[in-house]
Image 1 (tube, rainbow, N blue to C red):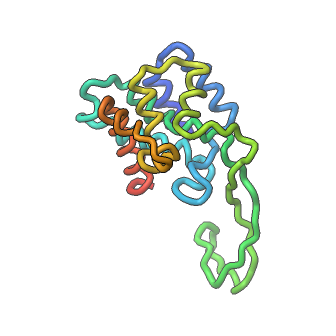
Image 2 (tube, rainbow, N blue to C red):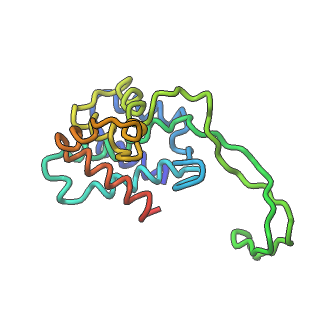
Length: 197
């Protein structure tokens, strides 16, 4: 999926600064990062996979009306740039019951209570704490300009899960009234998370 992300990025995003942004993402480990610590895509490469899934959801005929493929690729592939360096891997021992290890060949069975090392991810407390959608915007605009509608879409892609909304902000209503793209991105993000992944 890492190669698919890079291929789609280079194919659709031609804006000035796009190459430098891609270089930054590669250097910072975006392609290897998980999408979350324990929910969707909580494995190496999960973030790139999720981003591709969101973009593919957006590349539908009804969404493309009025938007360029570049804009769709930008919001789909880059909405979660804030997750660069947000999670760090850790190894932990877990107790397991009888279970077949289908990833090895030939299949093996672990004994009850045997401890097995498992790679998980935890929140990186040293990551720059600048929110979610807004942090993605800050990072992208260090390299490449965004349109107002791209900003609204990325900023509000979390919908009701956004901390500002949970705190009582009503800006999301104004954003969704002003930008169909913001609504489409939120729906694509939810569908990719809960249906595709």
